[in-house]
Image (cartoon, rainbow, N blue to C red; front, side, top):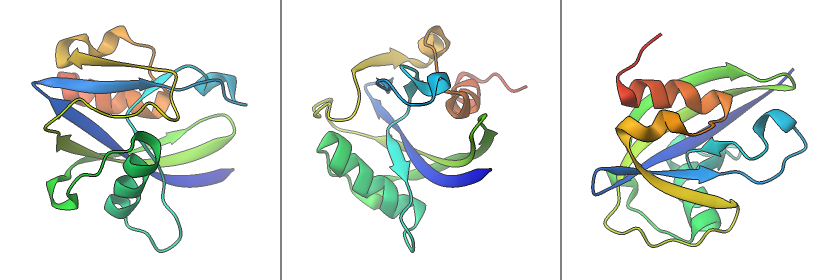
Amino acid sequence: MTGIEVSAAILVNDDQILCLQRGENKHDYISYKFEFPGGKLEPGESAVEALSRELTEEMHIELDKSDFEYFMTVFHRYPDFAIALHAYIVQVPSREFDLVEHVSFQWLDISKLNSLDWAGADWPIVKRLMGVID
């Protein structure tokens, strides 16, 4: 089974969190699911470096890497691959960004996060944010 390492940002503005919806994917189990923005680490890249690069590429936003606060790492197995997902909380001063890679987005209060259909690897992050631990 292929394993990938990914970093994701929990972007917070005015006590709400940005939730992005994926588009269609070759894997049905992640098509149109919600996720936190981010992406794969390139060889030799740290999780923070990858996250900064991905936010610039996929959303056209540039953030100071020193503002990335480590939150948790999730290890998840999908049917076709395994993922290590490093999540960081980032307070953002604005809600301005370009929707480049995703089909929709929502800014939600933490208490409403579980109302969305999240990708499997993102669910543990949602649960911890909401204070619900399995």
